[in-house]
Image (cartoon, rainbow, N blue to C red; front, side, top):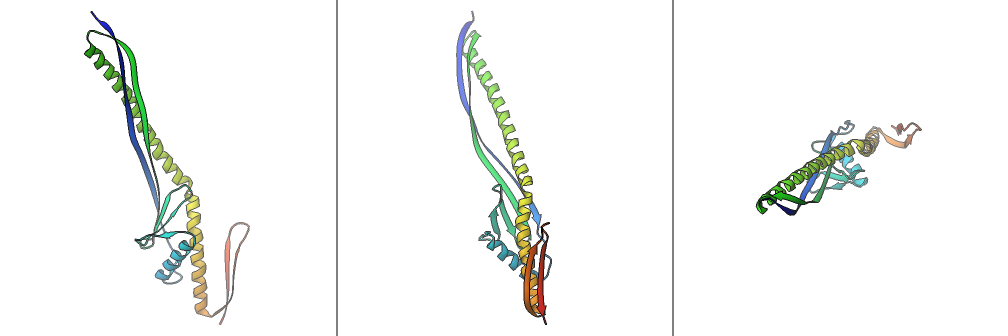
Length: 194
């Protein structure tokens, strides 16, 4: 004769979810001065704008959404990397009355019910991991304009300084005037006497 057994089981499903994404951009500097001087000017401009020089010589900073920005002057690349990590923990339990012939049979049935619930939670965690990855990718896409503005400002400083040095080689610099019009166009006028 079968009996009613009350089965109470619980477990915790815990997982570290991590995701990362990166994007790499080539950096190009028009050679107004020798390439080594252009790179020195670029490095100095970045350091003046708050970038840090790492032990390996690369320059690093933090972008607008928390991404790590790294410039390698040797390979002339900018890499933007965004990482996220979190621990997700969920308790899974069953509390059910089971009609069975033996206690072991009821426990086995309860264990299979718990395993099904755990698998459902695992699937949700996989989904959450995918969503985290998509979120990081979207953040990198959305912040690209701010990154490019940071680099363009530094490059503008490099070209200004390089053109000023080059003009100094042609004669005595009388004046250097910089302006930006209402449409955002930058103009540099260097007057030189010979």
